[in-house]
Length: 258
Image (cartoon, rainbow, N blue to C red; front, side):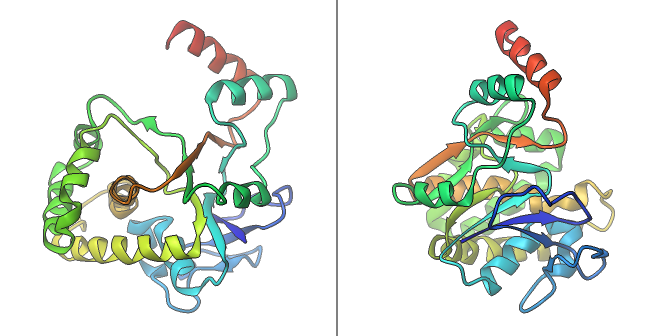
């Protein structure tokens, strides 16, 4: 049982809990001074990392990992043990820090749930489709819908439903069984690879070229909704931002409704 910590560079990994294993993505071109596990071994899409982001790590996990249970986190974003933001804020205010949830605890959740995912967040004004259109290129989401209609038409109504919601579980973060991951990845990557053939991103800036990572975040929610998966949500946190001052500001903003 492993939580793979996706990274593209060196980070302070010495304080991670047991079974948190760094995985260097984009290993075809990113240096690896810490001798992390790399996403360019075995069957892989490491070379696509500039546009697929952490999904090259997800692909590697799908094709090369043999754990019973496994998950994806980031070098700075982790699951907390908390179910809501208030618990995270108050604990951090008193302790000054917070630790990633132990893998043993994540395993225990899978006794009752199919997936552990990030507590849904609002990503902007309007619904998910409108949010994507504001920050990215709407034509790309239209292409995704067309591909779903072609490859997985039974998912189309679920896609439309999810895109009409205002919040989603972001960051492509999860913990689940390998069996569930295999089902998800077998659905996700054919869609993304088909979209990749349709959309020309050569003139996109470096941020917009991360397109398939952004699409994966939305499609993950479509998958979960359509499959009627039993979900446990946890609050994620950015380890580079969490401290008492951050917690105090967050509590104040919650009280004032900001």
